[in-house]
Amino acid sequence: MKTRKVPLRKCVACQQMMPKKELIRVVKTPEGEVMIDLTGKKSGRGAYLCGSVACFKLAHKNRSLDRALKSPVQSEIYEQLARDFVAVEEEFINSRNGSEDDE
Ligand SMILES: [Zn+2]
Image 1: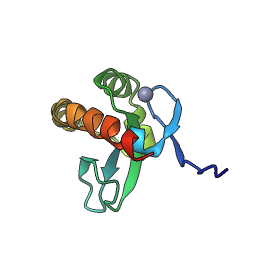
Image 2: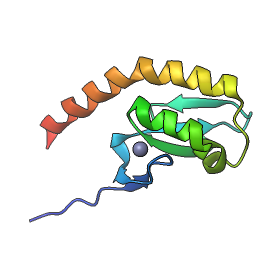
Image 3: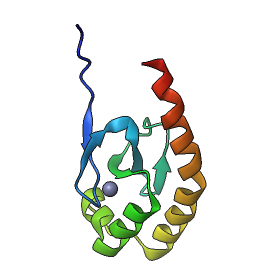
């Protein structure tokens, strides 16, 4: 019997530990740009959120992203991220469900 070690990351909004692939990564690039990183491969400081808009809103309210990224996130960036979040949410959920078949 093989137990595969799943890397866990904490959602910055609700503080829940989740498998990395079930979280959406938000990255602050070395250029200071804050964006959603669906590939998980962009360089920079990352913060993780569960793939739900509710948690994103909570992160905004608590300024959890600011703390996780160790820099203030402008409200227009939050607004941009919120739009991106809604756009990727469905794709993200679909890919998550789809990947279950590989197990
Ligand atoms: Zn969360």
